[in-house]
Image: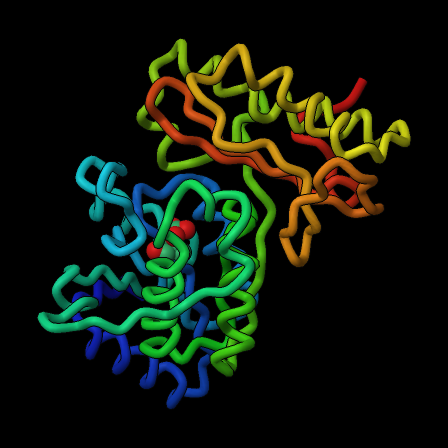
Length: 292
Ligand code: PAF
């Protein structure tokens, strides 16, 4: 079946309603487009769990700060459509901003404590914008399953909370980070990197790997784990927003104490002018680079 392009919220609602009326389960993969293999793995995961898979392609203005990259965020709807069709999607929802935020709109989803640490400290309002648009997408789709990438680990935790708190009957699935062979986590923002910056960007996954090796050897001191990642990131980064070890469910940073048997190690740094994030859950996932 040909991939359907839906532009209006009312069309999205109708298409998803019609799918459910035919007895098909609906899955949603929210994205901002500029799709890469990481996104396509989300589409394939959704396709395993739902018959009708809608990929949303919307660069959501409310989640960008005034000095962030909303204007230059990569956009390629024809390319995205070809990619998601090959990954098994049924429809693409690519609305205009004015359709998602009609004139006079002023309602936002308020997010709680999960939005305070990590990226929340550096991107005020970001998670409120994410939660608002995701709630709108959930309402339109009435999906039974939604697939998000674990690269945006904090976003995933907030979306899970949102679905529970607002009683959305949707299963939120977190899909593992997809990486290049050399460890770089796939991201639409990697397109901003020069060849030299791309090399430097490997410091994020190298930092995670260094901390994972210490953790595997029994180290549980939060400061030492953080320092191991920081030491590799520091020489490569233009600036570092944070390298933190935190509770993987509540996201509260561990400070200088001992970490548990599952610990989130998360980081955000600028390589050149490009802000990149990466993370892993120590004790739960293998490190980005094979350990020797
Ligand atoms: O992860 C993203 O691409 C965005 O934050 C999302 C979830 C599509 C909301 O705009």
